Image 1 (tube, rainbow, N blue to C red):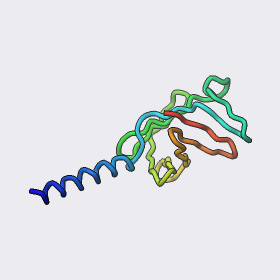
Image 2: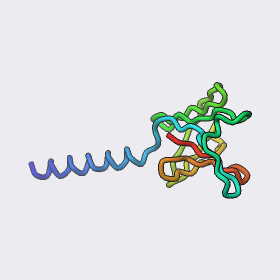
Image 3: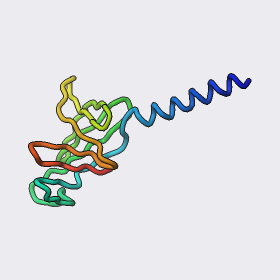
Image 4: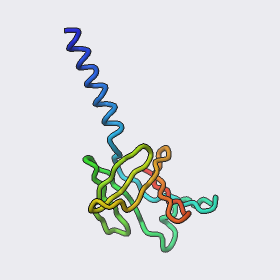
Amino acid sequence: MKKVAVVLSVVLLMSIVLTGCSGLSGTYKLTGAEMNGAKVDNVSSLPGVPDLSFQFKSGGKVVVTTSGVSADAKYKVDGNNVEISVDGEVGMTLVKEGKTLVLDQFGVKLIFTK
């Protein structure tokens, strides 16, 4: 009986650890930007800035939405890096920084918040 309890405890612990590391969930929306140390909050309210978001789902699936147009993609978490790919090609890599995801494109950091 004691052996069964230990095995069950190990299985439960492994499932908790693997679930926590397996991926992201929920929607991350573009909320800020940074360039050369200058930060802008609430960028989606600025003229010409598209409404951009990532909705992470189970099974490594993500829905990328920009200006009301959505596309299905896949994602993979590797440490703090989140790789978004379409048709097997990595299109972008976001970096998890605390509760945000950051996309660095040509020196402009786009900040996404859950």
